[in-house]
Structure formats: structure tokens, C-alpha cells
Length: 358
Image (cartoon, rainbow, N blue to C red; front, side, top):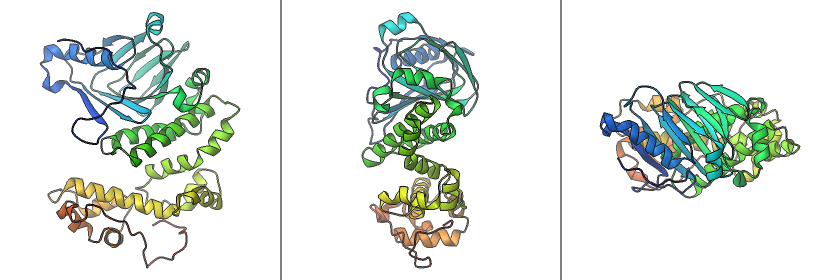
């Protein structure tokens, strides 16, 4: 098969069939077995910086690759085939973009060698690869590589290299690795515009905080303070299903007082728990709309997934927000209210900030 001209991972990528930033690069299920290895190798070489590519495992294995871009943040997800990437001094001389790759292992085991050290990762672990230098990486069966330029992060190459082997020492390590996976999961449904911009900005902020704190840079304390609101938002998004989520829990997790939490959040024009309610209802609404009336999943199960253990309470809040009960919304496929206006006021609760779980 013919090979495409080399591309750049940071080039803007858009799907041709709508506003989704996700593009399917390769699905070898539709490729004859004898051509799958060549197809896989060609796509990797096309999307990456100059690198020697070797495929590991059995010949002709199924592989799927997707790529997406949200502003300055792009990602490549590889699922189904282990790969060895070897970037030599010759490759660096050809092209050395000042870009970081943050790699989350999704399945299997990988080994990344750079800066004189080996980093072994299993599912859920995060490593950083510096594209300005040489490295060798054996990826596992599935991985997610997120790319951000140093200039967009506002840090230098030297700081990135200092942070590379110290990521786990940062208090932001767990938050960032979960955030990157969550962004990948929602990238396909994140429309261009305000939502995409917000996701991209929060990702850049979180990664910057991770690197600065891991490198023990003198600006670390200031950066952690600057990213506090972003870290709180990312934490809330990761715990929306927790019905016990409350201002007290959020504040305690971030080692701040509830008053400080309210002050940090005050610029958003809504209380913390009103925003939590908004995100839960919107998540449930999108799921009900996507599954449709023939779905085997009950409305109550959807409610529990979005932090509503009491289906009656969920139905009341949903109807107040969207003008109809959730079951009716699902039957209508959301068509009855294409542009819903959320009404988060619940007369059964006080008009105050709210101090407990909703």
C-alpha cells in the first residue's frame, strides 16, 4: 500500500462529518490481514515525528487509532497493537519540535527509556516523553498520547526534562492522569466553541501545574495557587457520580477551608453545588438522549451513574430543569426541547449556597 506524506501530530484535525474533533485514522478490521502491519506502520509514521517504528506481537493483529484536537491539545489513541518507537539523534536532527507527549497506559505494560532512565508503566500510569530528545518506547496494547507544545504550557524544555522522572512526586499526578483519560472519553462529543476551549484551557493549566510541581521549580507554589480552581473543577468532574460530594469534601480534599472554596469559585457566577447539579443533569440528559427509548438501561440506573441515588429526586430536578420528566425526554430523544434552559432552582431547598450533597 502507498504511504502518505509525513504529517505533524499538532496539525489541526477535524472530522469531516460534523463538529466532533475526533477522527478515525485506522481500523484494520476492514483491512486484509496481510496488509494490516503495513497499514499500522504507515499511519504511525505519518502522524509522528521522525522515528523508527517496529510492531510487536503477532502479525496481522487488529489495530484501531483515533486522533483528536482541542485547540493546543491533541491526542492519539492506539488500541490493539504494541509498538516499539525508537527516536535517535539522527531523527532529532531531522525534526525536534518543542512538544511534550503525555502517555497514559490504557491496557498492557510499557517501558519508556529517556534521559538515562527506564520507566515501566501498567494500566492507568502516566509518563512524559520529550520530543526534543532521543528515546525508546515499547508501548502496551493500548495507550493514549496527549501532545502539548512547551510554548502553550509556558514552561521551558529544561523544566520538562527535570519533571519527566518525578511526576509521581507531584500532588497533581493522579488528577492529571485521570483528567487526560476523561478528556479523551468526551472528545468525540465535545463540540467546537466554548466547551472545547474550556476543556483545552483546563488541560493546559493542569499539565503545567503537574510539570512545575514535579520539577520543584521555585514558581511551584504560585502555579498551584493559580490552578486551584481548575484542579477543583477537574476533581468535581471525576466525582460527579459520588452522591456524597459536598463543599466540605471538596475543600478537605484540596486542603483548603470551605470559605476559601467559595471565594475561589465566586467568579463563576454560581455556587459550587449549583454547578455540580448542572453538570450532573447535563450528563444524565446527554446519556438519556443518546440511548433513546429502546435502551435496556433504566432511567433510575442513569440517575445513579450521575450522582442521583433517589430516582424521585432526580425526576423532580430533571423536570424543573428541562420542562419534562426524564422518561419522557428519552422517548422524545430530546427533540421536544432542542435548546433547553436549565432552571436549577428547587423550592424544596434554601436559597443559600448549599453545604451538603445534592
